[in-house]
Image 1: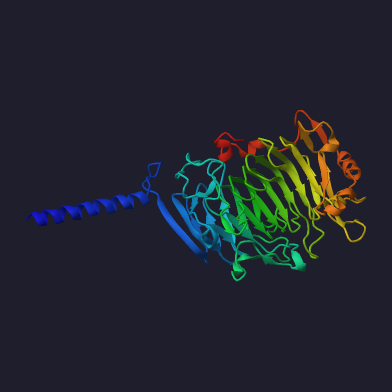
Image 2: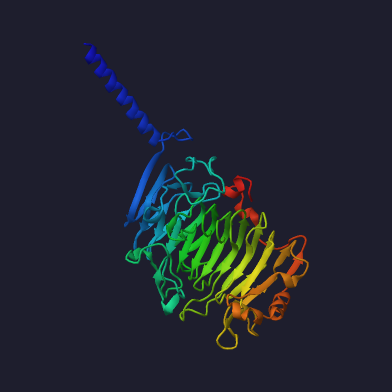
Length: 430
């Protein structure tokens, strides 16, 4: 009899432990509407799919929205990604021909974060992770068919970090109006996992994304690598906030030729550039020009530089405010050291040519250096030709563009577009 009672007790205890384990996977709905299910997602999304705000979706590895499929994410939905590096890094990838319809609202933003985040359904922010909690998962990658200027004259290429034999990593093409979906009121937090030697995932990666795609009200906070990086493409971005990234806040490559309007960069801690801008890398799609307008680019501690314009950078920076830096705007000059240090096409030449392709117009330097000529400074990677740089044409181009030193800003971003819904504002960092 004693053995029977002991066996019954052990069975009952096992049942209690099992039920407790199940309850750990299904947290209580804070709104009192029942329970929240955690839906684990991995691999390909090959047909039209919808995610709803009453669930938490957990990315286990790479989740790929394939060509012809659309993922629709409801306002207020929380997506948490597992930790991991290399091939095990969690990320969401929108392949060419796939669509992401992620239309959050100010009252109900869509949040991409880590499984380590204690945020729950109905909340806009957790309480246990800070802006220094980076590299906890990968990020969001959107790939399209719009023009790019890759090396060797390639009109399409493979996004960094995805093996060449994974065809979902291809991007680029000839459709400038390509449509990869809609991304609005999205917050991407605590990402940037390592996927290869010296290669991390950006918060939001846009490869060859076209103007048919809608992107506005997007936040990237605490990413280990870049905040937003555009590899070519033509997509326009409105109302973007990048804060406390580990590398560059906004990085433009392969001759991105869209417009980014009303944006905020907040530097702090170990970081690199506010803006890192490259132009065409190859012989295709060399005519496109970017526009960066109405931005506030600020450092909280003087770390990093306001901007690095290099590799044939070409476009316009207008009505922006730069503040808080000790290193301001860097402009690369390139020389042929085997030909008497003759000047080659690069950002400096694009800025100083009679018909300029790199234009700084009506920007304000808030509490900057004593002289406007000290804001933009040229540099070269060719040591043998470092003495060939003549700063005066660049200084003349910068001063004639209506750029000014100010003690009170009148230009820059409208920060009200980021209040009440971003992690940055909710946690008092805006």
